[in-house]
Length: 112
Image 1: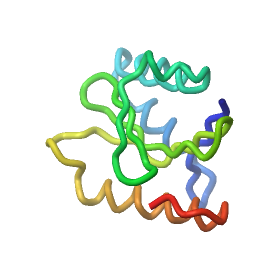
Image 2: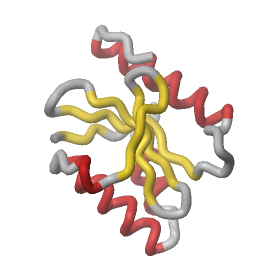
Image 3: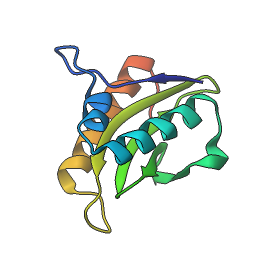
């Protein structure tokens, strides 16, 4: 599978920036999760549907990466954050929804 990271308007890779900012053990776990996703090994990671066609994958210390599987070959990573409560923070939820709509407009599909 091909992972497509969300890039800001200035070209910054926001997903990898977040993962790289984590402590070493969390960073390693984050990259391991992404490798499993690339290989299609979803049985080795903890993920769930977040909203409609958006999923979230968990890794060490309550870290989350939100993503959409567009087809059998392409996964679009939308946002990454630390989940601090039982519910996704409002600002993070708004970011995920906005990016899912952007992706939908770009691909001519509706994800959220």
